[in-house]
Length: 174
Ligand SMILES: [Zn+2]
Image (cartoon, rainbow, N blue to C red; front, top):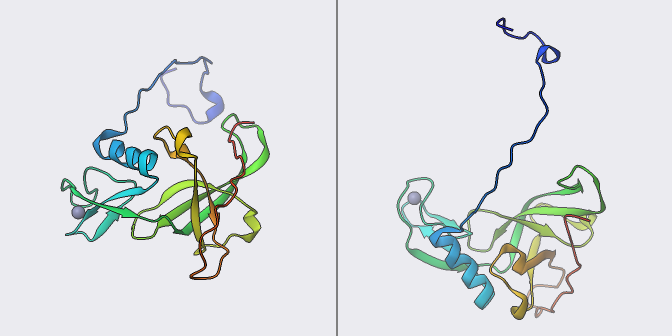
């Protein structure tokens, strides 16, 4: 066929798969972010003063002005739910046994958002709500975002001490 196709049905399809494997490294700033999360249970961010932007997770360069970032700050642990959605299909396209809520969370002191699971009833969530992380037991942390089990809605009154919330087990593949 040398003429351009005029409809998708006119394209010859040869089904097949291409095996591709990835080895992803967290990078210099990412390693420090995950180390701080695993060892101290804190969220590390980097700040670009000229742009007045605090990035969390920490990154090595400012994506606005490309300057190397050296100023580290801790942000959170509470944050604001900037957006959320309820995921009903898994990565394989099959319906999940239980829907998973995924939120974009702006940790207190950060300007960027962290994407993570949000536990609890999604019907009780609202954009702008305050959420807090449920961290894995320190002995089980591996230096990954899964060291945060999920974020949960903060229901206590202002000033009331934090109770350790029970994390519900949320898995994307069931
Ligand atoms: Zn900058």
